[in-house]
Length: 112
Image 1 (cartoon, helix red, strand yellow):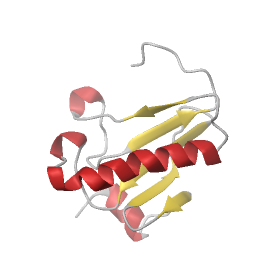
Image 2 (cartoon, one colour):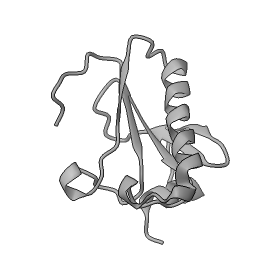
Image 3 (cartoon, rainbow, N blue to C red):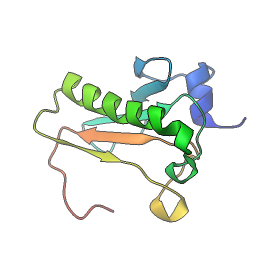
Image 4 (cartoon, one colour):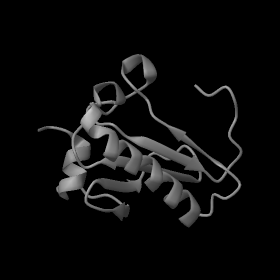
């Protein structure tokens, strides 16, 4: 598979890992859009949220719980944003489901 995130999980591409368990891997984004910008991905390759299946419900929940834990660990008690881009029109640039944890500054609305 030629997926950059799968290669990061496998260790063949280096990353600044912040968390790993049997289902989830999290690392600092190489092009941060906020003072804290962490990507949280499933270890299982799921191309996008649109491609998730009912059997992926457990890992989808684990992704959200991991984001909440990482937000606490990284001092984002005043708030943070979680972004999931899906498909080309949604701004997804890597075809592997990933959640952006963004914080450390005031977020604005509307995004995008």
